Amino acid sequence: MRRIILITGGQRSGKSQQAEQLALSLSPNPVYVATAHIWDEEFRERVRRHQERRGPQWTNIEEERNLSRHDLTGRVAVIDCITLWCTNFFFERNKPDWEQPSVDEALEALKKEFDQFTSQDATFIFVTNEIGSGGVSTDAIQRRFTDLEGWMNQYVASKADEVILMVSGIPVKIK
Image (cartoon, rainbow, N blue to C red; front, side, top):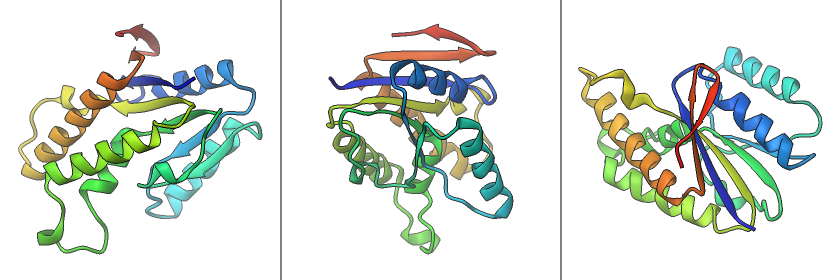
């Protein structure tokens, strides 16, 4: 049975830990889908430490954009995180500034990929950041990205069966 859970909150609020604990309570062998682009050696080491901490029962998938190409039928998966996934659609590497997608183009591509990915019969636990809670940026690009992620978070929340807000390590059920 398909199920979508969204876990949101600020930095270091306990989102990923909550998602991992929930996944392990639902499956002895969950999947961890990391959406981050590995920028440098320091970040690669950080990823390695996270994988090690999770343990051998996890199946680890690194996927920056095309989540739907992975068959997760019957599985429980943590997708960490929507923020970095949005970044990968908003800032396309190897393209000059004038060829970057607009907020609307990136949002439509994200929604399409989300819908295709979550059409599978699986349990999806999405992690995201509430970056819009930090105030309005003075930088135009940051404001556009905040808009994109805010709208994508709203879209995912509207499709979710359950939404949890993490506050200082405490899960607060929203939906």
